[in-house]
Length: 135
Image (cartoon, rainbow, N blue to C red; front, side):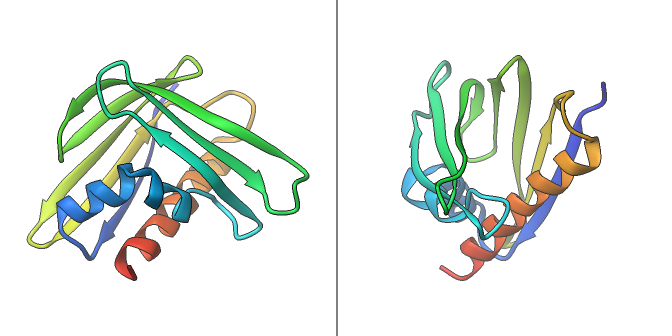
């Protein structure tokens, strides 16, 4: 199955984008696809084999889950890859003269349509862009 790619160009330097994408205090501010959801807790141990875990919940408490991943590759400030639920993802941070192109490429799951998965991950990335550019 082909990977899904989502991307955004963020009006911030690569270091800020990396930090806001990887530090738990920032992850909790943007890591949800819809305003009716939130991310009340995040942990991130950026090392090969290190664990990432973000709690994603509906604000009304009706549903929630932990997104858990383990790092397989890290090039500090530039790129990382992780495995999650038998799938993989790679996140790239490309410097564009003071702006940063952020590219997320991931294996789709087989429970939901490709378009729905792409839209959900893109929505999260759009939240990240808005949060990073305004903080």
